[in-house]
Image (cartoon, rainbow, N blue to C red; front, side, top):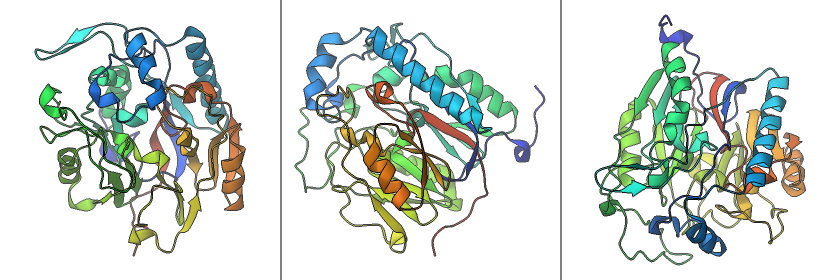
Length: 361
């Protein structure tokens, strides 16, 4: 394929809300229960720990995967019906074992959540140095797409591949208590971060430290992006932090969705914005969310600054968004939610119609 200049790149995305033109939507094929490691405990729901320990190395329930894939397909068709180009990863074979000289895994996890491992900033796609060993080769499911985007003229970068040896993880880690400053199960042995710990607002990118993103990872990204962007590190009242998009989500210029209990101090940049407090989720307590809390209801996806994709049964957040001038489109996603994400997690916006600008004084 002939290489073109970067102005013709298929990749162009500076924020979470410009008009969407192309997106990657994940797949649930061959989703596997990962090998249990101590670093999973601080972020997974405590009532799900036994499930992971007992089922490590096994596929997730066949019916759940089938239903989750059906929901993903309906979501993709919904986007396509609005003229949006939808791309999908491949099934890399997540049941296969693999090893490094330092450790081995019986299987990978899945290719359901492209938001976690790839970060699009402008016309650049960055492969993130994820801290979970079960996700070490997950990016391979996206390699055919990455090669195509690179051939179109985009920048394709990869953070240093982490070793993920035992030195990265805090031995005998004890999480902090609510109200205390966040304590991570990671050390600073090497840079690690998940893309989903960052949200984009043009020249300003907001991120958090978590149980998958350490200070070294944050510093690497800040230095890599350079002076064209301003990275802001936020602190939340959340000792189980993993991914910012169920706590703090800019939805449009002047509109910010926030978790009602985790925001200690609103960043000064947002003092004049319409702050939308997420309502109590509609999930019943009995629903088996394997990886996340019920606040996955906040994980909505903007296809432009006026329209959000929202889970069809989450009536409370639908009503709240509409009260703040945002139209909603609903589609079922509860089976996919059980795998640990929702619409924002399941997508990677590749091209939005917009340019780099500042939204703050």
